[in-house]
Length: 74
Image (cartoon, rainbow, N blue to C red; front, side, top):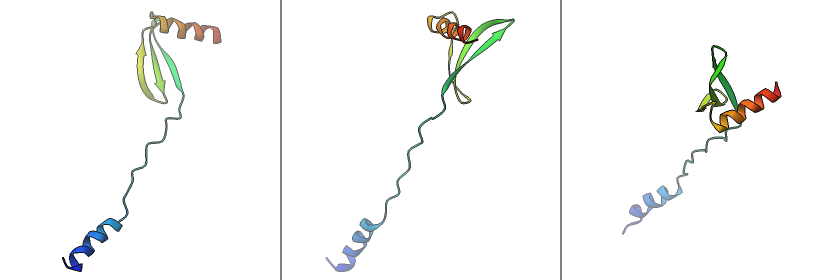
């Protein structure tokens, strides 16, 4: 094999590789918003910043705990 055929392969090995940086960790705290209709809580939204994570039924065990914490903090 000639040296010319070996040189491009060596040059390819020397090229720098590009790495993609990982996404930064979510730093915003999770918070809850009560959705009310006619004065009654119909849903609880779990939010992170402005992103809606999930909806919690206020009649569920977890929903009752969240509402109880809200009532004691008020």
